[in-house]
Length: 424
Image (cartoon, rainbow, N blue to C red; front, side):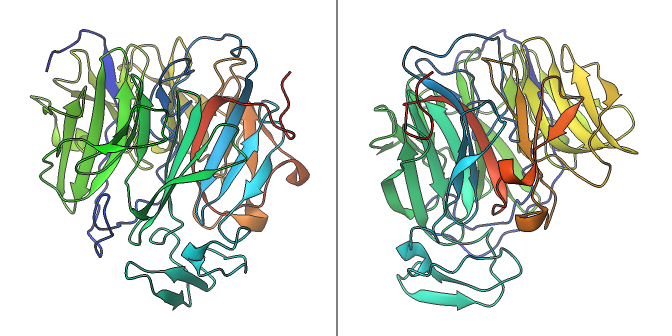
């Protein structure tokens, strides 16, 4: 595979992922990777007319610009229990909340009782097609587990299900979703170079904007469980990660036919939960206090510690001139860098007992939005935030947000007009 000279930044993670029971299809066993903090993604990928590159939720940003004619710039959120929601007013309000319960989905055995993740009961369809009941619903390992959201080639694609087979849904407006795959689990979804790709040991590749898929070649990961998938347009590469217990690796491809591995990666940088490219690539996890950078097209990586040893909870994103991460170190701070190597910390106004989840940026307005991201901070404790600079954040009024299931992914894209989000 050819190498590219664009600077790549990677923020590494040191998360231990322990194997669980095998799922059906997709990455195999469904291991809780809860808190994939900030897939700080703009759009999930870069296809024709896409606003930003990346993987599921991966936080890109890029320069400002107008929406394509006839399209509506929107943020879309994906969460557990098949949840999606939309903001078409630059993150000021959220609407279009739908879940598997509201649709009496067969994956929840037709039960319309609203689930309380990790604290209440639920019904679900297992891999043998039998309805099962759980007294305490493990939403990380269920048919409704939110695993990936990407925007590319005019469509949003979301994959659900981990530990139990789920579905892949597709929408052109963020409100109306159509099932395009079922009976499998996929670790993530990413878009770029005219492809929308469902992450698996042998990924499923679409070249018709997510309508149909064909199987690519086996990535030949050493660990069994595939975890994340990212697209880096300047490097012309997708990067897929895998981790099972202490074993971790990264695989690179431009066409899902041939694969390669970086020639030099420190152990700390092999477990990747988030990545972004802005002439660079950043990869991070909820508790990493360092970043890893590559300046040779993902061939080699080096580690760079963040000041103060913070616990990172969100990011990275690229805003066109700098990389941004959010974490806790005596309070919530934003960590900024023009090159991914030298970082500085700035205090934010986020209360120290709150944490940002997935952060996503609009390349049209530069606005950043995020849900609250810490454990058991959902439903009546859920909060939604927006900011123009990543330092000063506005917390939406409860009536303007959604008391939702745990939010796992965020994406920006350009939607077809709808009654709820008409054309400007």
